[in-house]
Amino acid sequence: MITIREVSAYVGKEVTIGVWMYNKRSSGKIQFLQLRDGTGTIQGVLVRNQVAPEIWDEAKLLTMESSLYVTGTIRQDDRAPSGFELDVTSVKTIQVAEEYPIAKKEHGTDFLMDHRHLWIRSARQVAILRVRAEIIRAIQVFLDQNGFTLVDPPILTPSSCEGTTDLFHTKYFDEDAYLSQTGQLYAEAAAMALNRVYSFGPTFRAEKSKTRRHLIEFWMIEPEMAFVDHERSLEYQEQMLEFVAQSVLQNCPTELQTLERDISKLEKIKAPFPRITYDEAIELLHREGFEDIQWGEDFGSPHETKIAESFDKPVFITHYPTEIKSFYMKPDPERPEVVLCADLIAPEGYGEIIGGSQRIDDPELLVERYEEHSLSKETYAWYLDLRKYGSVPHSGFGLGLERTVAWICGLDHVRESIPFPRMLNRLYP
Ligand code: 4AD
Ligand code: MG
Image (cartoon, rainbow, N blue to C red; front, side):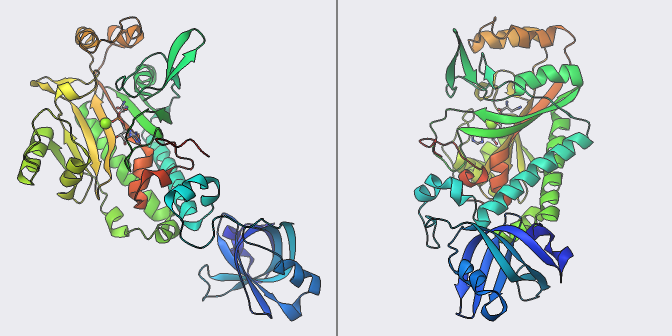
C-alpha cells in the first residue's frame, strides 16, 4: 500500500491506497472518484465495461467521506491538478459514511466550529495544519542550529508572570495553582544552567477578549539566552522569522497555493527588520490621525495596524514605558522610565507576534519590583535566587505560534491556525 504523496514513483504500476472519497461524478459509463488520503488528492477513473459488475456497483454506493481501499494503475496526466490519475481496477469499501454534515454549500462560522473535528479534513484546513507543522519544524531547526537546548517548563504553576487578571485558577490538592501563562521564568532558570534554551508548549490566558488575535490556549516558543543583551536578542528574532518564512516558501508551495497566499509578501520577510522606539511610534500615531493616544498608554489593535502599515516588513517597537510592561523587564540604564524590550508587529494587520526583553539582573531592583507589583517574596524566592548566584545579563522572547501561523497563511482569524481552538465561549469539540 502507498500514499497519494508517493504516486509519482509508481507510474504504470498497480497500487493500493487507503482513501476517503470527497466527491464523485458519474456519467453512467464512467465514475470519477475524487479521493483524498491526507497526503494528497487524486482522481480515480472507473470504466463500467472494464471492471467486474460488482466492483462498479460497490463504487456506486460510496458516499462522501466513505473510506475504502482503492486499487488501480497510476497514469501520468498533465491535465490533472496533481499530474496523475488512477485507473481503478478494484475498490474495497471499509465503511459507507453516513450523510456528511459539511456539504459543499457555504456554512457559517459557528457551524464549522461545532464541526471542527470534521472541518479539519477540508483542503484548506489541511494546508494550514501542514504550514503550522512546517513553522514549528523550521523554528526548531533554527534554534538547534544556533545552539539552543529545548527545556520543558511546567504547566501547573504556583504564581503568575504576565499579570494576575487572566490567570486560570485550579486546586493543587490543598494549594492554589494556575495554568502557565508563559514558560519564561523557568526558561530563565534553565538558561543559567544550559546557556541558550527555549521552551515550547501550550500557555493559557483567561482573557475575556473576543478578537481575531486572541485564544485562551495558545502555543508559545520562548528562547532565553544568558550573556545576551536586548539588541542581540532582536537579531535572533529577525533571523528566526526570516528562516521560518523561507522554509515555508520552500517546503509548502502547494499549501500556500491552496491558501491563495500572496507569496510576494512572504518573500519580503528578510532581516534586518526596522526598529522604532515607543516614543517614535507615538509620534507616528499622532501624525496618522490618532491624536488621542498619550505617552504611557498601551497600544491597541488599531494602533498596531496603523504602525505596521508604514512598513512592508515586521517592525520592532522598542523601549516601552516601564509602567505598562511586566515586572521582570530591565530598565534602560540611561532612561529608567522605559524598559529594554520590544514587541514585534507583523505586517498586514496581524499585530504583535513576539514580545521580548532584557531581564532585570540586579537582585535589589527585582525585590523593589516585587514590592511595587505586590508579588509574594516566598512564591518568587526561587526567581530571585537566579540573581543571587552568578547573575548575568540575559534576554529572551516569546513568539505566539498561532498568530505567526495566521500571518504566514494569510488567515482572517487565529481560530483556523490551531487544530482545536479554545476561545471565549468555546470548549467543544
Ligand atoms: O507578550 P507576551 O504576553 O509575552 C510573554 O508571555 C513573555 N513572557 C514572553 C517571553 O519573553 N518569554 O506573549 C508573547 C506572545 C505575543 O506576542 C503573542 O504573539 C502571543 O504570545 N500571545 C497570544 N496569542 C494568542 N492568544 C493570546 N491570548 C495571546 N497572548 C499572547
Ligand atoms: Mg506582549
